[in-house]
Image 1 (cartoon, rainbow, N blue to C red):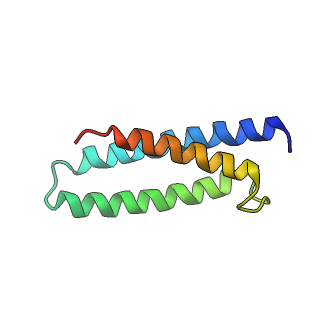
Image 2: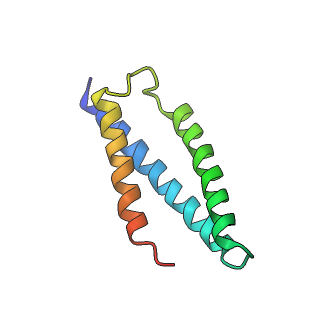
Length: 92
């Protein structure tokens, strides 16, 4: 375990978190003008989140580590922190 692994995990997960936030913003902007916007937005956001989760799983170079490995935990925390902070400030 090197500091380089921690940094790579954090940077990669921060980038993917911002990519996920951008996806959510695009979906919510797209469904504003539709009928049943809430249902349509939830369905599209769920599908987009599942697809992004698959991309995250395949892109992550630390796939062989267990879920409790410190490098993976640092990445999950950075992803969650960026996601929560940015979703907190979404103004609809």
